[in-house]
View 1 (cartoon, rainbow, N blue to C red):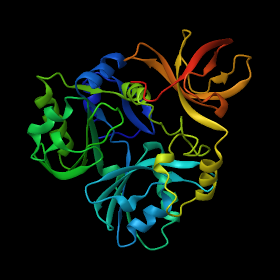
View 2: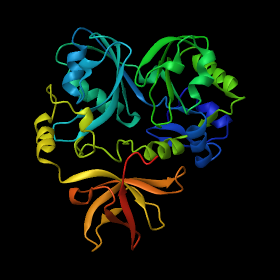
View 3: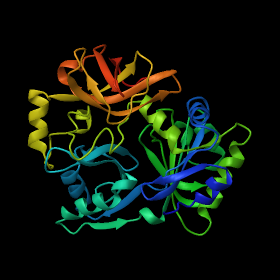
View 4: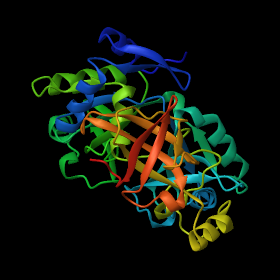
Length: 361
């Protein structure tokens, strides 16, 4: 398994470790519920250095991004970021990603899912017909997400960048914890506020940054958080996880991602997505809450009251914030309205649930 710059730190903190996307990653430290609460109420630190980062440079960099993504990156000014997706040729998604505009029309950073780094790189490279300079810097880029309502106030003493007033989906580069050329971004995967910090993994930069964060945050009770709570936090917000809720066979229209699908430019599957938006889709990704006791899991069938299959669960968990089980799943459009009764097949039982608004919290 690959290591991140912080693998030894996780082990020293007593984390439960497991393989994820080829990396030895922390799943939990003090327990998922405890870590989840820390992020919702205070602040927690996630090691997400396994994520992929690509730098695209040159006069045709924006053109390439426009041709491979669904969102409109031409709207980005320097210092702005955008959520987007990479559509394939068959009406599905290669991946979802973040696009960072470093220098308008010239330099961009794409942040992709860890399990899709090679696939995404190959897909974008296939469309690079105008000699855009591409650099895969995933292996030498460290990334920490410090999330929670108190995250920015805890971190502010470590940088001159005004992170406490940084607008959502903007970023700045500067000095952080004595390390130069750090990119601090007001983004995250928890819905709890906070920042993500990108830095070059060289010398002892990772050590400096990690130690500084936990030293400055010790009095306020900042905690390390694993991938277990990352999943429960993102699910409470209804955020899609690639490989579960979206994949090569799901369209952004079906997944409720029409808002990142702009038809003012050309990209793969544009015509199909436009038709889906105009005519409607046969299935939709919905959120649901369990009424009967039971935990919905990925792959469980969703039924109607007569027992006919109407969909499938893509993500499910016991929500630490709500104290009840929640999930995401694709259902036939006729059952997608809020408060629709659906049933989750758990073992041989049909457990009642109802379609609910997203986010759950």
